[in-house]
Amino acid sequence: MVAGPTQTGPGSAVPRRVVVAKPGLDGHDRGAKIVARALRDAGMEVIYTGLHQTPEQIVATALAEDADAIGLSVLSGAHLTLFARVLDLLAAEDASDIVVFGGGIIPEADRSQLLERGVAGVFGPGTSMAAIVEWVREHVPEREVG
Image (cartoon, rainbow, N blue to C red; front, top):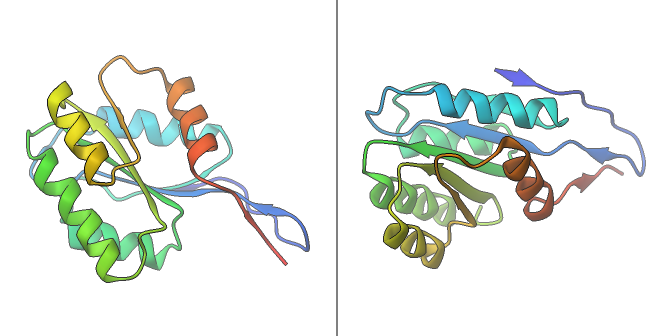
């Protein structure tokens, strides 16, 4: 799913491009789709990768789509491993400027580990879509054209 308007010209801002992904074997994507829609409705371009993506596929998509951010949704309990692998792959591609954030069922103790590792933001169940949209606007800079 790719959504959101693109206007280009000297001095105009390009909408933020966000890849929303479901890494691993977790088959529950309702939350990821809700976040993707909220970001799209806020004027961002969103690329939703679908279920069962590997970290390699997610990073390849982010690079191919010239993404500004990657939002990961993990409910399987493999968040520490999956987030770390995405960060490592981005670093290997010299693409650590792509902001990584995510959410799901992530214990508080693991949230601090993810943040220390380089994940920019972690959201749990009950986080409002308005809060996530605002966070992305504050932490993912818009790019200027021209």
